[in-house]
Amino acid sequence: MLSLSKQKIQPLAVADTLQEKGIAVFTLQEFSRFFKTSPRQTRYFLETYTKRSFLVRLKKNLYALKMKLPSEEIVANALYKPSYLSLEYVLSRHGIIPESTYSITSVTTRATADFSALGKEFLYRKIKAAAYTGYLPEKIDGKTIFIAEPEKALTDYLYFVSLGRKTLNNRLDVSRLNKKKALVYAKLYQRKNLKELIEQVWAMAPAVIK
Image 1 (cartoon, rainbow, N blue to C red):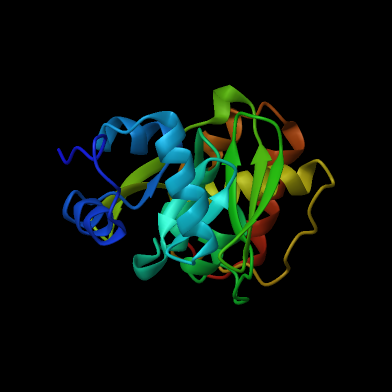
Image 2: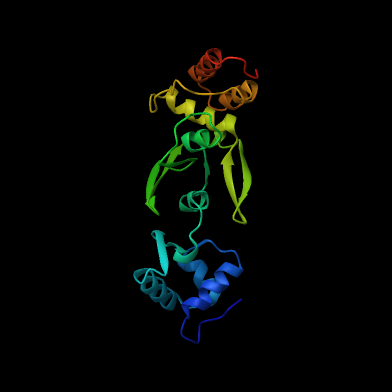
């Protein structure tokens, strides 16, 4: 662990250490603990080197190195916790919807929230705690992120359709998905019309796994 508490903080030394330790994003408290700097010293460094474009402020008290920006998936998991990637972002990633998505969509058990960072919109939609499952860890750039299984991303999406908060995409391709798994996830939401929506989506799709 590099201690900078009794000397001027050198930005290149900070960058080297963060990259060596695989730290993609960090808070003031984490920086202070890791480098053994005082809160005042840490705050000055973060504010100064953000203005100099050495660091990027992702949101209040969350930073990353400008020279090695984290992936949008890593940022999405870090901006708002607990959360996992889901909805249109994951559906597009798996080719379930044909459109590419500008926004990075996730679900959370916390209040709905939106953030802008790195020129992207990060959207978080609240689901009930009982339905907060169906996601898996995935390694990206050496970091573990949490992302929904395709069937769970679809079920999360259709849940918001059932609430009237999203419009049903009539070009959903569920040919590679497992209907039984989607129905199991749907039960977690305890909404009759969600099950009906899943049945409707599969009824419109030819030769799918049921």
